[in-house]
Length: 448
Image (cartoon, rainbow, N blue to C red; front, side, top):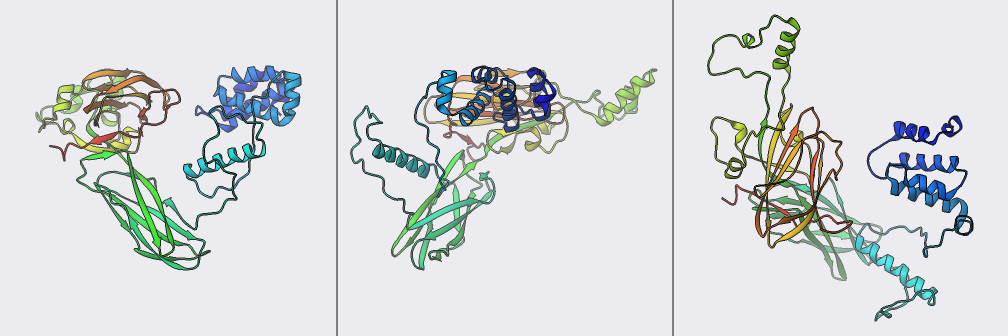
């Protein structure tokens, strides 16, 4: 209908973005809308449509990928080769399969089975350059394990010192009813409690039990990744399941630092505070007075604390905000409001200590919606003063080197207008990097 009403693809693109636009990658309405518009307006001209999809300016790789996939479904490989000059880049397999589990290890196993199956069916179509691996055997029919353990998290598995998370387990067996003894792996700094020590299960009648994982309040170093194992054993066999919880990022918070448009002394009780705002201009008087009553501000350029004071953490009996308090962030992404109950424009200083066993380089992505500064071991490594729409990759640090021992990271963030979002994500130092999961947060209270 939209394409019938207009001949201009730029207009149509702007309408699709206005109605369905989203700055996140791979937004289906946005990508499919542009793809369908290009198919209709270019009358099936695959080359022109593919170029336009790449140049659309919105998540271009996924939009072009959608365009190519739909063209393949509509025209088929033979027509694309003959009319558009495209070449078949390789073997493509479409497979409908009911997943037995959601484990990556099982997915890898099944993917390997598909490869072996293809090699057996088409031995001349595959050239193994490194030679045939030893022990290569024909694919056998899949048989589920005699005993299986699966888990289900009742809530996001983030933990701070003193907090508990529950994990629900289901035990299934292909055999007759029998008793299974349950055990859980203990890990330093954590307490793991099972709801049952013995359960009974049979084919078609699974057993359900719960593991409660508590991070001890006195834990000294909070690791991001914490793995545990649960095992169920019977007279005829058993199964084990590895699961994990995520340690929250520990910050020492200073703040909130905020300002008003006038500073009125609380200690010298003299004239009324309104005398500081008096002017013959009624409008200016109302603006200034009501700002004092209703509003606050923070200055991203002002140093409310210096780096030495932040590092030393000397107690200040006259200013609560200058004394550190421990706060916790769930993963990499947080907002000022999640860390402090203060509701108003303000600046926070967040100090994190990361302990390394060796020197290491990381690729770091910073997301920000407001001004920030990031210091590493007393050196300013990144700064922005403006307001941005948050993405996980507003800023890239390539590379950032952490030294062996303790590294002090100070993240100065601010919220000037009621909403904000920040993130600092450590990744491996390579292209398409995976998340670096070997970091931690050292707590001051238990290391002094």
